[in-house]
Image 1: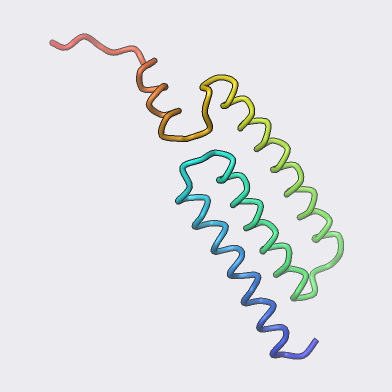
Image 2: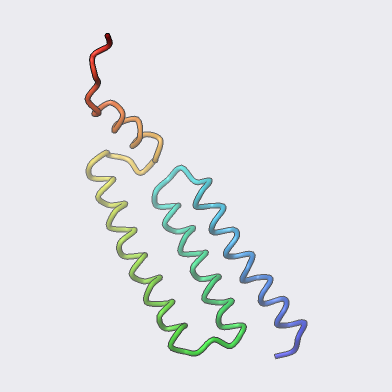
Length: 105
């Protein structure tokens, strides 16, 4: 692959990683956070493929992304069942209400 094409591909891969990381921190929805991390993982795997990583590493990256997807979606489903929402601020507020309070002195 030519050098300009490699640089463009790496720039796109880095953009995916950064966009996924920023979106995962900025989102208030648990499912959107899982999706954003998957985008970042895809960008990292794409960058590894661009620099000529061995196929074992790429297969491992795909397996990790698949496992993260399965666990992340299972957690989101469990949050929806337990709290009736996937919005993190509503989940935090519900947890705050359930916490036992110490008496004021």
